Length: 116
Image (cartoon, rainbow, N blue to C red; front, side):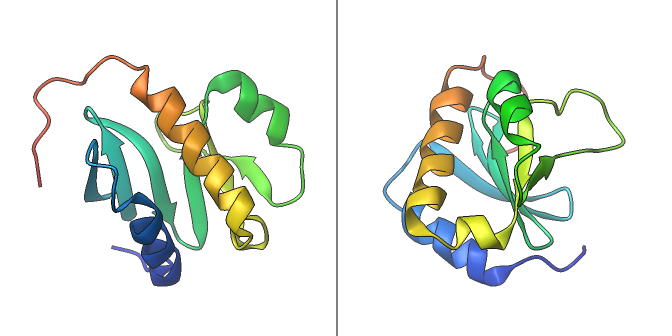
């Protein structure tokens, strides 16, 4: 497992402690926060991974500090990677958290997910 930003993990844990619909687990070389088996937020290396929806993601990926989340698998076009220079600002972090929860809560539940 590659290293990931533990400070960001602490920030997310603090922000998400009262949200009982989120499940935290190690995922894809970092940490993932899932809703109904769907990844909502995560940490990969030094980036916040935010699932915000395809259209919002496409509108933001050209901005400094935001880039598309790419993987060997297709189907990640509703995710973005957010650099520390952005998520270190509490209001920006809160906006990405809120948008990710709102978007992911509307997705169908994934069946047969192992609870960790």
